[in-house]
Length: 159
Image (cartoon, rainbow, N blue to C red):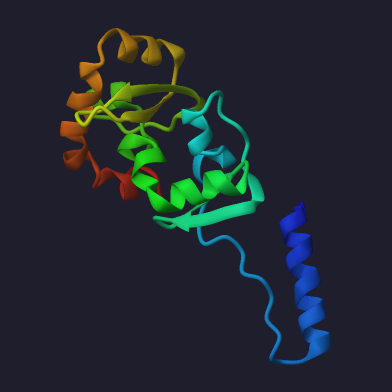
């Protein structure tokens, strides 16, 4: 079993809590899976995506989101829907074919939404990104289809 720095710090905190007595508590571990494989969701809108750091985490929609800096975390906390990938991070091109597929956080596109605000879409393959950029209407059609496919998440992606 591999121990990460987070696990080692948690074990140390538990040891210190044991020495201090029953009133001391260890720091909680993340509430859910790490979103975007640990990439900073806000950084996608500022330049190339950056890796997030454990010291700048927040929990939203049962996932732990990491950020490269405190300012990005605060921006996300104020408007998470503006920064989180659309379609729960599933590939819009595959979605039009009725499939929910995992994506690569380094293959993405930012497209203007109906309000004129850019939206982040993740894709599985670069050819899917090329298709989406060539036909931005794919995003709107995938958004329309999304409500009918949402119930497949628990079936196709069990925890």
